[in-house]
Image (cartoon, rainbow, N blue to C red; front, side, top):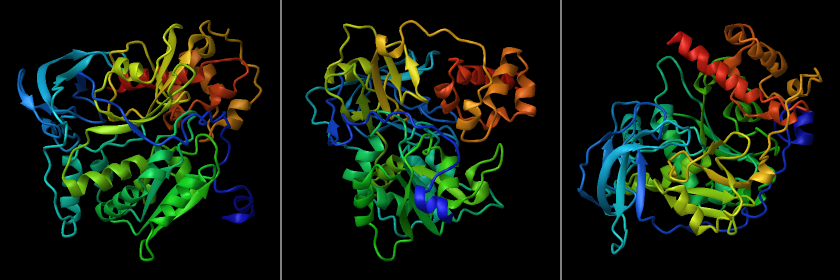
Length: 447
């Protein structure tokens, strides 16, 4: 790894160091949230085609039952998170704004809410193809936020071979401690999932990257690794955005994913630690993904922590149970403050992709936006960009609406919108917003 890596820890060039703000949740055990009286279950909770409903209004369903099937290979099914009655299939608000079709499910309050729809199986004799189909049937998607169907990552295109499974246990976003607590409390399930993922993708080894500020997670994982396991825990430097898959691949393997490329092109598949825990628990039981752990934190809540929450739980209900301080109109962020999305409606539900909810009072979030000043060409954004772009030049091109030039000459598509450039910009230029607009207009032009 070289003398510099030995002294400073495995990492990547550049990046930033925002305050962690994890003290209120990192040492708290995961708690279960009560079931909401009504769930909102969008059919589009993942990358790819939305699920196709297989239930009707007034139909009773049991917890774990398939209520929407996968619509082709680039889709996953949706399972009932509670035993209840289907109230309808309607257009409902989403975190990103546009409404989308969702199944409305009313919870039966007198039911035990045990999982009643499962088919335990022996996985030892399954082929790679059968394992991949079983993963799809479980409705598994990435738990780190992107919600890419897990089985699609394992279906490596012909002509490529994956030799290494990288497990992302970094969680570098401020406030979020979901994966940290999962690695500490569910290390056995994480390792079980890794062993299944190695078989599904056909990789020779697995490397678990965990930041050096999580020694308890490192110890818990190492205690579950057997002498014959081709699995190792690798300590990496705590830095943002260390949890980005391209950055983690670079830190652990010194491999560079090509511009516009994907990890499988350098022989790697990346999964988040929470995804591995779901895989290790659900597949042997033959169950579907119906709940997930999310961090709820920030000055706007009285009882911050990590909560196990049924998918489809409205944010309004979640906030009621964590002591929402609603006297000050609050700033709600799904995910972390660096890459998360703000939400304007409390009727938006928790989906498979939601890793956290950060609640900031408007005074702290900036009720009155700071003025934007002209770029002073200080170069801080260039020094911070983890993929080596020139955010200042991209910002100037965006102001001139030269979106094609941004893509063709300055590799706009390599930007994964981590926000490092905007975080360090003394002129308060909203660079990430500029880049998102440019990408959207370029996609529209090419469609």
